[in-house]
Image (tube, rainbow, N blue to C red; front, side, top):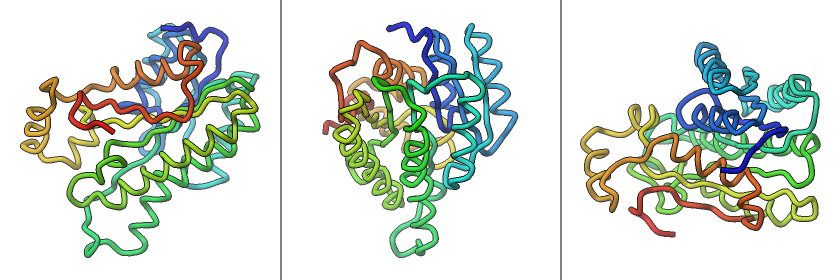
Amino acid sequence: MDSLNGKVALVSGGARDIGRAISVKLASLGASVAFSYYESKEQGDETLAAITKAGGKGAGFFCDVTKEDSVKALVEGTQKAFDGPIHILVNVAGGLVARKTMAEMDVAFWDLLYALNTRSTFLVTKHALPAMADGGSIVNFASQAARDGGGPGAIAYASSKGAVLTMTRGLAKELGPRKIRVNAVSPGMIATTFHDTFTKPEVRQRVASMTPLGREGNASEVADLVAYLAGEGSSFINGEAIDINGGIFFS
């Protein structure tokens, strides 16, 4: 894995599950890592401790990634903490909130999912870009749901993540002159609190048994992929959305 010594990374939603694994992985490779949390400062403190244990430097910030002023404060805090440009941006923050069919959801729910998953990626990227070094890397988070429409009650989530895929491709073209690469990852069934909350155990077991590798993925495997996309080893990969699902779905 490429060394990230001297690099500054910003990870939105970097305080738990996949986000935490990414924050710690980037720090272990030498990057100074700023991350945001929302639900729990305790989770942020735990992530900061894990970064320190991995031998890295970290800084955690509360941020509501759907609010522009909060995102501006996150970027400003990152610059103050590490006194330099941002080289790596990872947009992890997002969520499902609840499973609702089209008949069950209202406009407010639809707008909430787009705010969490699409508006958040737009806001963090927009305000981080002026602080980013040319030649940097952006990694957005889509989902297998963006590829296949998602499971029951995930229409709003799936479509909002599909928008992230399209945004990724457009940004890859727009930021090419600055040599900033923009890619996305599309995780499938990864063992996280997301599925602990929203997916029934019997469904998880069935999906795992249908997966060619016969299991769920784990957060550290996703973090390894993100670290690769952040480093120089992926220097000619741009505008891609890479599936990480054990082979259950091919795009």
